[in-house]
Length: 242
Image (cartoon, rainbow, N blue to C red; front, side, top):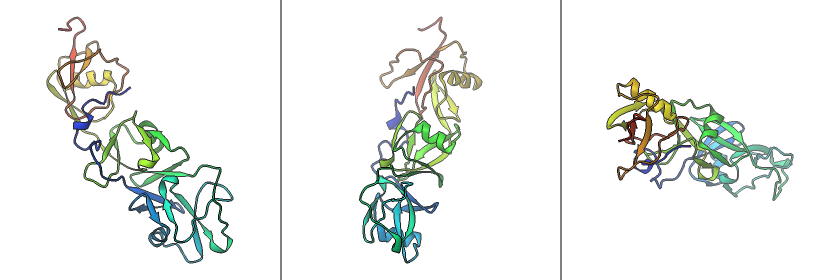
């Protein structure tokens, strides 16, 4: 379970952003960036260089995948994986009982699912993002949205992500401690603080300090904390909670 206090104050977290998320679609195993969630069929044809005599079909992995008529508007939130079908063979179907394929992109690599609800952890596992790299939703803004492991991820909010190496500094007993992983265990926070010269030990109790200088119960060693720049902790000997 992660602690997310002060997230809204952290530069680059994107929680305060109102810019649109970036979108992309997958056509014949090639990624094509798209300017928005709903795009004209003609625009996709132009950007993907679809040859004459072919139509787009949204990929549901069935024999009767829905074909996109010429001139239609394509809502990528309904599925962003497409294939080409010969126009002469195309049959138009209004519905498809099988779920549409969904392409999730991290650093221009893609993986497919049919599940629109994910978590930060499941996206990381899907793309094998190492723990010393942040996962961020790619936003049309300088500040991308930081994704922590426990965060709920909805495909409709945008399937394009990037990763970058982690460097985050927090305060432990009023001293700075720097981490190269975003979500350490509480035990790792104490180990890192000790390795950087603070007089703390593995049996000390760690508390998060809140904006009003209060703090709650001691954090269990097996709890993961999503660290944000400037977060504050108190780490004290269990024999001295003063």
